[in-house]
Length: 324
Image (cartoon, rainbow, N blue to C red; front, side, top):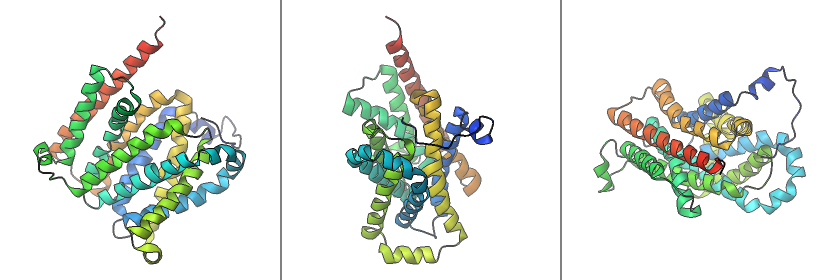
């Protein structure tokens, strides 16, 4: 990944020491993304999902634009050539995913939303095989099946046969669709223009903002409704907006990009699996939600499935890299 211009920091400064700790950086990314689910719950009664998404990407774009301006100007030819993919990432992976996630929190427990999010890495694995014909071992398939069953167990509240009658909570269904969207976003990142992370976030945030306002205009209460909701927000609503605009949208992207640069994408991707863990734990401690027995059973399947799939992927990578 191309680095964006940055102000040199003293090697002994706290910021420089932080940026040299990959495991801490990647854990912080997962924590900030996991807490995005809790923010969606706190936004209920303040902003609807469309208004929250519109405010999130507007504020995020305005925050990052001054810092990204130099990189945007120098990398403009690459941005212009790849604007279609940047729009795709902003519309699908940033706005559509988060609109569905915030909507899901209004219909189902945050614990459910967090655990269903564990389907994303597995859907990426399945997509790699289905779209790009990336081979999967038998052990890999076992891990995928276990994880998918765990997600289904959560979505059906411990009664998988409810799928036969399509008896699934609307919130759980929305989060499943969100996971599918983000998996597709992740799969297509292989076509990302060769630009720095700051230019990437600024560009995709711009398209995410446009998409969010389109959602607000077509499906939400429109521009007048957005103004009315913002005008009546309490301090809690503003705190939610600032949180989702700054930490999940910008800071988590920065810490994850730095972590990937320090230890590589294969090892860094393991930390994505912490997002549903943090989301579920925060739902219990911050929202007072209860972990039911079906959550425990589903967590066992999800953790086992992801562990087996990751082990299979790493073993396959070792075999590929093994001297012949």
